[in-house]
Amino acid sequence: MSATKTGAAQAGAEFDADVAIVGGGPVGTFLAIMLGKEGKKVTLIERWTPSYGRPRAVTFDHEIARLLAVLGIDSENDPAINYHDELYYWKDAKGENLQIVDWQSTSASGWRVRYWFNQPELETRLAGIARQYASITEIRGFEATGLVQDADSATLTLKRTAAEDPDSTETRSIRAKFVIGADGANSMVRQALGIENEDKGYFFDWLILDMLPKFDYVASRGDEPAQWQLCDPKRPTTIVPGGPGPVAGGPRRRRWEYMVLPGESVEDMQTPETAWKLLAPWGLTPDNAELERSAVYRFQARWAKVWNKGRCALAGDAAHLMPPFAGEGMCAGLRDAFALGWRLNAILDGKIGVDALDSYSSERLEHAKHYINFSQELGKIICISDPEAAAERDRVMKADLAARNFTPVPTDICQLGPGAWCADAAHAGELSVQGVVEANGKRDRFDQAVGFGWMVLGLEADPAAALDAVQRAQLAALGGRSVRIGAQGSAGDVVDAEGTYAKWLNGIGATFVLLRPDFYVAATAATAEELRHRFDEVMGRLHVRAAVAA
Image (cartoon, rainbow, N blue to C red; front, top):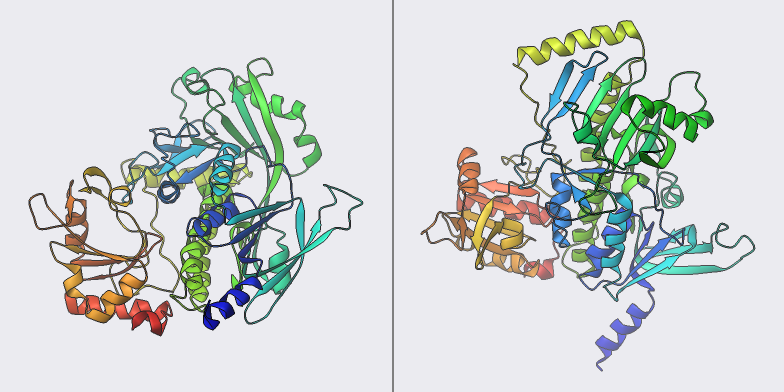
């Protein structure tokens, strides 16, 4: 072995892991998979030995369906995931519509707007995928109690959790090239890094009841929507699906969320007696339904002021908390994991600089803040318990709904915060459009037929010819590809089977698109010259290594 290789091996031996992740929930596990599948050495630390077997999140959006598809989880056909081909209604105390939201359509990114799932089943699936990778090591029953870092590493101190063994004094130390805190709202990693929260001062207690009816609840309720919001000042209530039931083809889970009113005791609200009393008007009894979980949660709105410091970063609830009214809490966490995953893989491979983590922080922080603020605004509308204020709200919302002829409002498109994308390019910083294509002998969504990663698309044009030699080398070094897409019979590598890409790019006057590994648009361009200019801008923002560019 050469001296250079020997030195590299010795340096590598100093680390217990490339990345240590504190928190083995869906966010931490998803990140571990993104790293492990690329051969990175990951240590995943979870304070609880058994997984928490109760539902928490019950819904995710089209973007998360797209991310899960990277792992081979097909949200359209997976037994642990389902959807309701129906709109989402907000109704007043009399059952009249206040708002109608489009949760029925297929999004521009190629998946349905909204899916429903059972979180314990999804977590089991993710854990199973993680265990397929030999480079991922799980440490369960330990909590992180200390964190220090230097220019090259971060070291965690772990202690056996008291719940596992109250008398244990066992400790461990993990030295990693990077540490990620996905350790929840009371994150030790965030506290150790001295990162403060920006708190919106928003606090509402809600009782969450997860139910397993022994019958087809939706069919039994006639015209009642499958997913809706009751804006009754006497008791604001959310009624939504809870994902598939334990038996394939059998009754599906349901969720009720009740606002805890002033003067009500949290302890009394969490009792089974209170649950069945609240559920009686909906036709649920202990004889025809199972109460899977009854818990009061405090809905909050806050975010960490910065999400990375040195060789450490935050993700999920450690970085942000939001009210659940938009159904985006877990979604935001999985976006964090995906955004960290492609950056850490590239940094560890020596392709981009450590400073690329700064763009993770700036991009994801602003994106999450959008959904936190949006969720809070929805909560301000829903959580009205004063009858007069509710009556005025109802009047305004009904007038607005009638003025637009009862047209459902679409789900919003959210742009990333400043980062590795060109702010002056149409559609840049947004999730990319995805259409059905024909490629590699199959017809499917682009991601599944062609693949994903860094890509330059050219509509009826050769994107490789539009880049110069150095840029082509950079793209190749990042594992990227250039793809010419066109109509049937054209010279394209990929057939735009339904004309989706032609409609999209012609609509914004673009010929080329630079796509990132997280499916966000880094840049669009009308000409080859414009593409070259914007390609260089993005590479610079990513701190691409000079050696890669050479």
